[in-house]
Image (tube, rainbow, N blue to C red; front, side, top):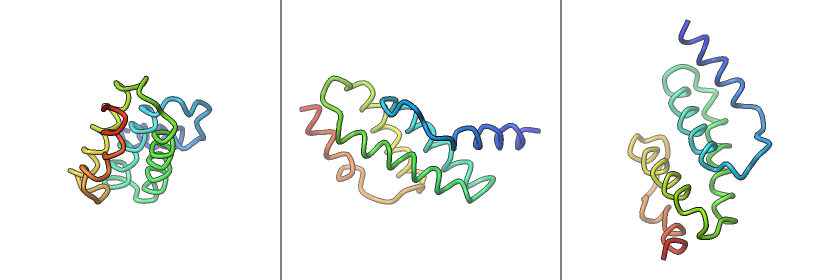
Length: 102
């Protein structure tokens, strides 16, 4: 039963977002998809990658007015690295955030 609910949620989340301003939602979707792919259905890793790409692209367009949202996204990226969903050095990955916060 839980797997069916998660699968329905995953299918719904794969639909294109109509509001790209919600980078936090895209980060949450990426975390969900990476976990779902690891534990239930590996094909959802591609969806996770797409969500993370949207976040990265969106960050490039954000200015310092969304600092709270950027902190949430930074925390999400740290989570993904710490749990080996993505590789890299978070100090390097989040270097662009430092420029916005300073």
